[in-house]
Image (cartoon, rainbow, N blue to C red; front, side, top):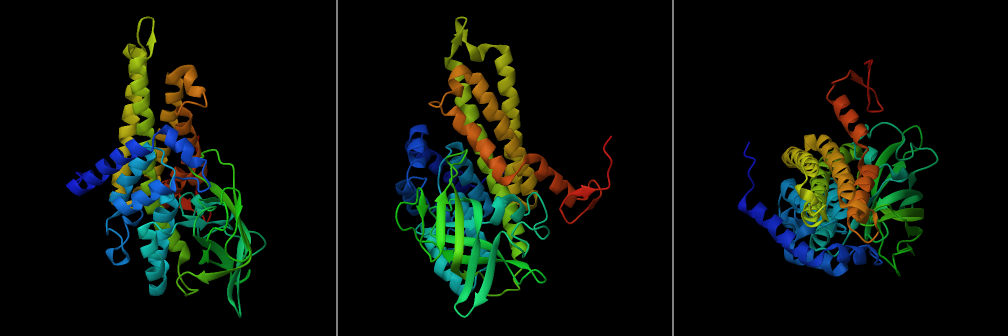
Length: 411
């Protein structure tokens, strides 16, 4: 396998890095997360119109660039380096692939060009805040009751004279407060024949989306206080809300599509986490070159050099795993585990090496700590990612329906 990047791929990375260096510094990030949208709308429009970022991995027939997951991963590595708050992850990495895979021709033609143009953002609403389970990253998404199990809880769907209606709520929906379209995972068929399906619920924002907003009938969205402000989360409440079945066929293999999307999303998320870790490390290296102690830069002390060298090796190993996963999404969950672990360790060391200033609200080091912790809460934790991957590979015995390996005694 040729691991070298093409000139086009290098250009995508260079162009995006230059643009974000000018328009997404720590000050701009703090200002963006305090807007009603949770991101800078003007910068998002620029990323969409000038770079085609939301349509990077969409087919050309729908207005996309027709690139692969590798290009999207490289772009997300740069957005991660800058901790860019944007709808890119929720829209282009999670929602758009599901619409492309399951949608009817009319649904794809009506939605994907708008997503590619950046005029429509979307969010995947999963009941119970169980995003990692729904995507098949930490457990088998065909088992368990993550979407309600056909009983009370989760989101339930029923079909009547007026079409499909949804009832229930979903917590911790990424960019759910501002997205123009919601992809809602809901149970239908009742308890005996319960199955999970995906539904399209238009959610055009009426009024400021920062606190509570509606749109469709019976829809209420509340922006939540999140550990990581650059990842806005929302509670989505559906009360007899009209929706359209994604794909138009109740026999669609939704769980399989979610798992396939999850593997690719894990690879892209791994690249983004590597970018965040690299950004934290670069800022730390620059700081220790300037900060003096006992008449010399603290970066000249051997103990500090050793710590930074260990962090560099960790980041580069995670980067190699992320690049491999971008080409082979089957390796995505393990690459994500390695990248999340690297981001957490590097961010923690960055705070320590910055000394007292690293703990202050004014310094950007804490932003990297929160990004690392927040991503592990949303898409991990690391040990469950590894456990499920090992179970699927059959390394430690048989895999039970809960997605974990059993039959091995650890002494």
